[in-house]
Image 1 (cartoon, rainbow, N blue to C red):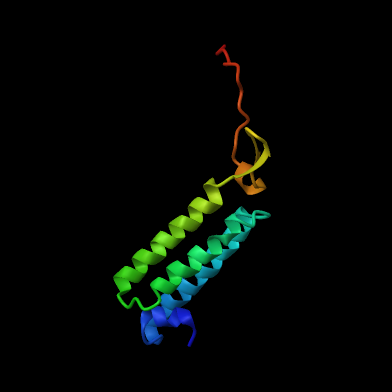
Image 2 (image 1 turned 180 degrees about the vertical axis):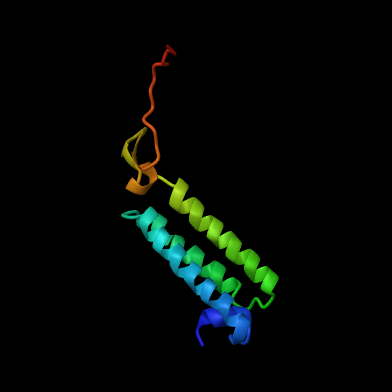
Length: 118
């Protein structure tokens, strides 16, 4: 039985379902971390924080608490995936933003000049 199974106790019947969800969330958070912080060794160390949080809660047995933790982890993953943009220091006071392509899909180009209604 893996580490995720310990989160829910016995790992049998209905209790096994949250263990699978916990493991899936763990993997998803790490994949998102790798995409969001690509080529940033310091930020990629978020791996340590993810592992620590899962390790701290691996003995949790309350289904309500487990659902709450899964919700928090899912929310964090969504925020990372949809809101974080990398910035690279190019000069003393200059940052170059490097948005991922999936963040730009629904963006509308900014227009500095107001448009007049006809």
